[in-house]
Amino acid sequence: MSNKIPPLKIRLVWLLISFLPLVILTIQISFFLIHWSIGLVGLYLVPPLFSTFIIKLFKVRPGRFSAKSKEFFGWYLSNQFQILFMRVPSLEEALRFVPRLYSFWLRLWGSQIGKSVTWSPGVIIVDRPFVSVGDYAIIVLLS
View 1 (cartoon, rainbow, N blue to C red):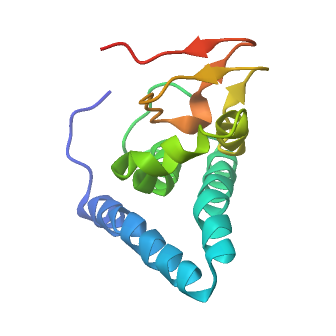
View 2: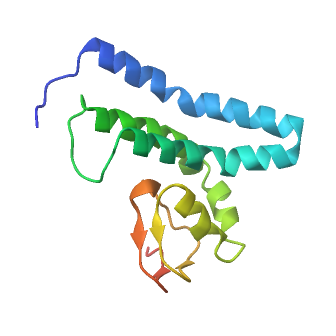
View 3: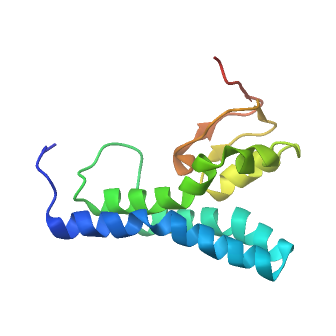
């Protein structure tokens, strides 16, 4: 893998994509201003569905790839839809109050989550589309 700096055009595209979380947050706030139920749908369903679409569109697979590749572009774009949940972990934590809801939500991102998986408080999932957990697992945050 090359350590060269990507061309200016690619770096500018990355910079523009980096503003996507702010755009998503602005849209989410406007959804909540319309009605709280539209806000919840927009918050918890739209980002995972868009992310899953992008991962499939760019055929992103786990592994290493060049920062100039279409796979990296797809991963980076998909990752921007996850940023809000990484910055505000309580949004994700709220889903764990309802049994199995968090696992269902991760599946919307493209994760492969088995039956009856238990998640402890504070667990942080970063690359949701590439998570794979077997049946009856207990995921615990160790400090």
